[in-house]
Amino acid sequence: MNNQRAIWTRLSDTELLAQCEIDTYRASGPGGQKRNKTSSAVRIRHPASGLILIAEESRSQHENRARAFRRLREALYLKIREPLAADDLKPERLAVRSGYPHVDSSEGRLRLTRKHPAFWPTVGLVLDVLESVQARVSEAAELLGISTGNLIDFLEIEPKVWEQANQMRTRFQHKPLRN
Image 1 (spheres, rainbow, N blue to C red):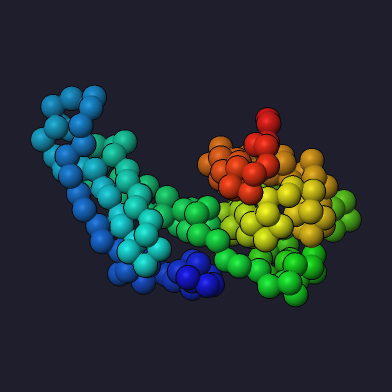
Image 2: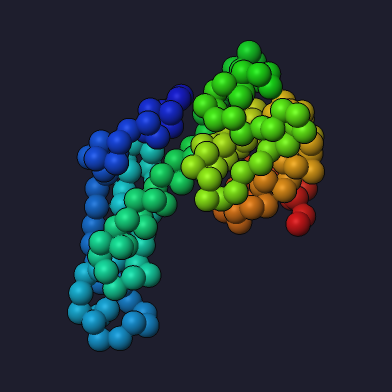
C-alpha cells in the first residue's frame, strides 16, 4: 500500500465514492418511531484500504452519508501510513511533501486548528513522521522543525489523533503520552 493514501486523498468525492461500497440499514437505539422505520444509518466500506466507517446519528440518510464520507477522508490520514524515505526526513522536504505551509518558520510552531483545511493532511504527515522515528516525539518534532511541546499540543487537538499516536507509541514499546 505504499503511497496509496496520496492517491486516494487526491481523488474527487465522486471518484473516491466510486471505490466504495455503501450500505444503509436501520439503526437501533433511541430516536423514536421514525428511526426504527427508516434505513437512515450509513456504512461506507473502502475495500482498497480496508476502512469501514459508519454514521447513524441523524434520522436523515443524506446527513449520515455525508458524515460517513467525511470520516472516510479523515480515516485515510489517521489510519493509513505512508512510509518516508530517509531523504524525505528533512524539515524542508517535509514541508514540501505536506503541500501546506503548516509551520510558522519564524517561530518553529505548527499552527493549525481542527477546522483548517490543512489539518487532516498535516495529521497524516505528522503520524507518518512519528512512525518513521518509531514514535519518538522529540525526534519527530525536530524533523518537523517544531518544539516537542508544540507537537504534543498538535496531537492533543483531536482525540482520535491522540489515540492513534499513543497506539503507535505502545506498538514501539514506549509509554503513552499523557495530557
